[in-house]
Image (cartoon, rainbow, N blue to C red; front, top):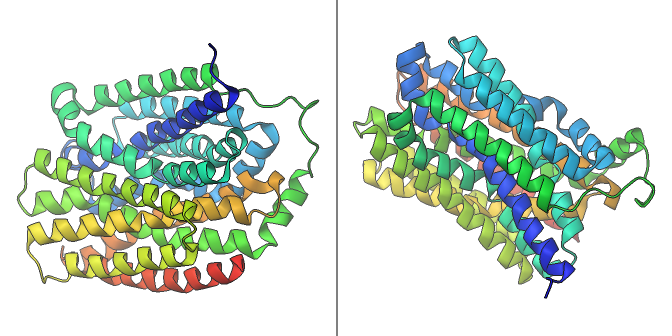
Amino acid sequence: MPAAPEALNGRAAWLVIAAGVVAALHVGKLPPGIPILRAELGLTLVQAGFLLSVMQVAGMLLGALAGLLADRAGLRRTMLLGLCLLALGCALGAMASRVPLLLVARMLEGVGLLLTVLPAPGLIRRLVQDPPSLNRLLGTWGGYMPTGVALAMLLGPGLYAALGWRWAWLLLSGLTLCWAVVVWLRVPPDPGHSTAAPGPGWGRRLRQTLSSSGPWLVALAFFVYSGQWLAVVGFLPTIQTQAGWSLGVSGVLSAAAAGANAIGNVAAGRLLARHWRPGHLLAIGYGVMGLACWVAFSGVVGPAGQFVAVLVFSSVGGLIPGTLFSLAVRLAPSGHTVSTTVGWMQQLSSLGQFAGPPAVAWLVARQGGDWSPAWWFTVCCCAAGLGLAVLLQRRLH
């Protein structure tokens, strides 16, 4: 007996979430490889920070415009294009022999990442109509980045040791192309222009989005979250290897810290489905992140305590993106501007991820390699996040 359309659409929504995880593997492949690239290509710590963040340049500059493209050209088409660009950028990076070429390849991957993840919330919304199921799936979608980063950080050291970083990246390029084929075959195609409901033009969609307070508040809340999370988790393997831990051990522990973020994302979706207030979830996330980072980097605990604190920082902080993706769908000015709203949120999120790691690396370098400035940075971000949580809760009312 054939499956019901609702079941097929639910499975397709999970394939969309998996596409985000595949895209996030390209972000997570770098942290465990930084010590190898520093030895092979002579990277400085600040250059390593830019390699961590350069994938966000496309999102930082083009997020809202890419959202307009996704809303207008088709959500599935945009995701397929993004997966193909990710595969191409990864292959080019595997063949780079100098840092500038590697930076260019990472920027191309950034365009692919943007076009892959922007359409996903709108696709999930189109496939799943039941509000509780939609909240749970959007909360789960919020965990695409930590899940992919954790998998890459967990598997990366072993693959780098067995294959070398270049062949490992080529393998990831092939996996990304294969997933593009899966999305093409299993996710329902975009509606034709003849059957799709007419919507406003590009300029009006952008004006609708940027003239509404909701998209701005959601985007700023993601901005102050994303930079601090990537800075702390992205540099964790470097911090641990400097403390004398082996690359394999630091890779496993860093993967656990990154993957723990997905717990908070899934929890956010379930708690929202049970009618928890979004502002309360955001306040818990920002408050715990600031406190945990102070414990980790203020010198009050040893290496083991530092790792536990980072684990708490990442897991409870996961409440924030899980909540914000749900709010982006709810606070979009209209059904025609969901991807544009998500694009604007992605644009400021990317700005945070671009600025966060180099800023922390610069502060640490000024302190002679002391990582205590990391908690100064995160506490400032969390204080701003708490204020935005209050404003978002008021906006919902």
